[in-house]
Structures are given as C-alpha cells and as structure tokens.
Image 1 (cartoon, protein in one colour):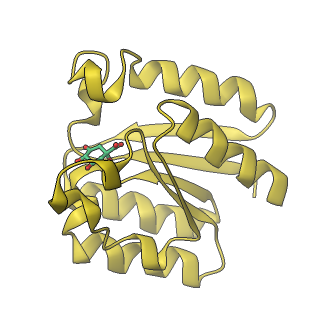
Image 2 (tube, helix red, strand yellow):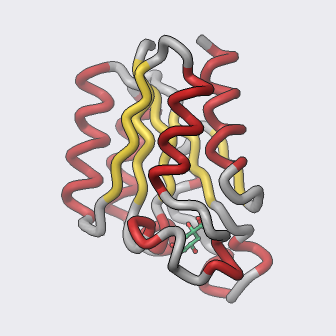
Length: 144
Ligand code: DQA
C-alpha cells in the first residue's frame, strides 16, 4: 500500500465556513496539507464530492489500485446503503478503510447515532476535529 485515498462526502467542501462551532475553522485544504506532511513518501489523495455515485466510483478505484481509504461519508453515513455496499467491497478485498468524523455524531441529534457504514469499515474514529484524519492516517501508516 503506497497510496491513501481520503474521501469526503457531502457538504465537507464547505469546511472552514460550515458551522464552525461544530466542525472548526479548518478547511479541506488544511486537512490535505497536514496529511501530506504526515504521510511522508506515501501518496495522499484528498477528494470531496457531494455525489454518492462519484464517491462509490472512488471506492472502486481504491480496490483497483489497492489503496487504503480514510472515508468521511458525512450525511451518507446515516442512510446510504449503496455507499455501505461499496465500502464492504473495499474491506472484503483486504484493504483498510477507516470511517472518520470530525464531530462526535453520538453526542448530537438522534439521526446521527446510526451509521450504516461502521459495521463494514475496518474501524471508526470520531470526535477529534481535524485530528480524526491524522489519527486514521497514523493507524494506516503503522499497519503498512
Ligand atoms: C460528519 C458528521 C455527520 O453527521 C454530518 O452529516 C457531516 C459531518 C462529521 O465529520 O462530523 O456532514 O461526518
């Protein structure tokens, strides 16, 4: 594994201005530069899409290129069975996929307490702000 795809779902392109009281004031570009620095020689590819099919196509790309995945499924976490089925294909092919959340969904509204993704992810990290991504990458780098 020489590549990590860091995939971000709907509304995460708005980080920095989106509900800073919940998500902080860092941007996705801040996430990307921090992870690139942390990753050293490992290629870190940070992407964001509001579209479910596009996120699914990137998960299939992860399988085809044998990349590890850090996935913040955003609101899709709570109801997208299509994304869940794509995630299951990633982990069943032997690749690591870590579900991350900036906030702690369990400390928020009831509808956020359910993740349809977690049961098929390798692991879950939530509630540590931008550090959720760094912790996920640290685990992937440790596993290599
Ligand atoms: C989120 C939590 C989700 O409930 C929410 O829909 C998001 C972001 C997080 O990173 O805390 O968009 O995944």
